[in-house]
Length: 182
Image (cartoon, rainbow, N blue to C red; front, side, top):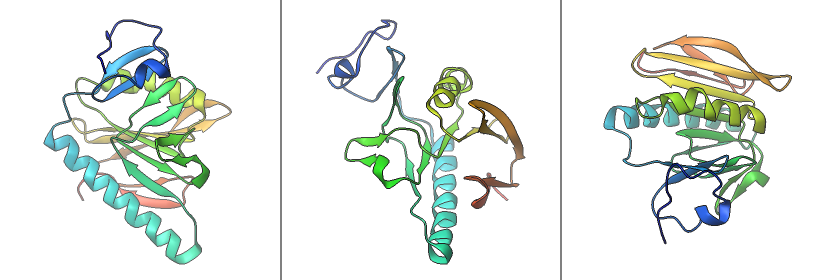
């Protein structure tokens, strides 16, 4: 195993498989996913995971459905590379494989941090949009705000700005959760 040079465009999935640690590979560029996020980030991630899981469980009990929520680190394989979103929801069981998620999840959540905010707002947004991810929720802990983007005619449109403690409808309004503390 080896480590990539972070500014060397042109890496492939075969290269990625040989690297030590947690790396994203986007359009041939390696992005180091270490160090791990801080505790505030992880608290938000855990809270969101629990809220989405509970909402999906409620849907399963009342009307069936097989959507599953996954937390980082879960590898997502898209045409432009390998991504490690903070949270994701997959409703098509055929996309779930032993190595990760094969194809576009139904929802991706990225929780901003100073080191990833630029990438989450631009590179990842464009990649998720191009891959056909229907919903992308960007959570900004500093601003205590969420931005829900919805794919319409191949482009993301802002569907909602969610204040901390407010409800947000996700997965084409199939579930509703509170964002952040109440």
